[in-house]
Image (cartoon, rainbow, N blue to C red; front, side, top):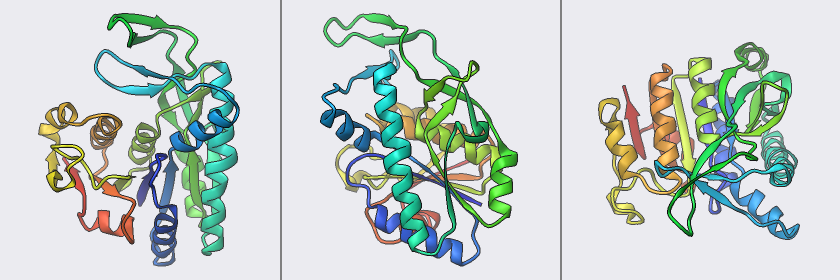
Length: 270
């Protein structure tokens, strides 16, 4: 079993990713796809005249500020655009894919972060944000995933979850993929983005870190910058969840998943 997280940033080559998923499925491999939404959500928000805002935690993690209005935009982009786009591409390639969000069948259950600590960029001080509709995933409906995969379907999952009070929540796609991979007992989690992996001297792609052992992953998280920090954190959570290995790979190359499985990228192991 391979779980593939497709980054939602600009520059991700969906054609290469979907073509590789199709090849793997045709060879008999079971694949689950989790996708991001950032670029599509930003573009849709701009069209609608809604500002895109982010929150930076005291530990340096950056996330989308998701108030009620932004949540509507994010949902439209995640489910109505990106998810259906990937499903359509895979169907055209002969893959019987099924589009889902974490709300469907309670696929991903999360706890809403009622109070989020964030750094105020104008003052550098911490502040508390209480109207943010983001959550941390606590439960995966493994039975639903197994039912679909066993029946020959390829699930494509959008990063939305259902909260304790049945509220819709924005969740981080990388960490969602890590939770899915751990719950389904995947052999490999491949996290694809628009860079070749963890870079020790970003953006110099020649500074690619080839391997990271779990014992050294805290140092790797400290090294990572921007959105890569969450990807390394997701790798840590996947390994601790029982996934054998995680590969941070490059979606821009031909056969990106196969290349990652072959060790191209940053390989995180137990």
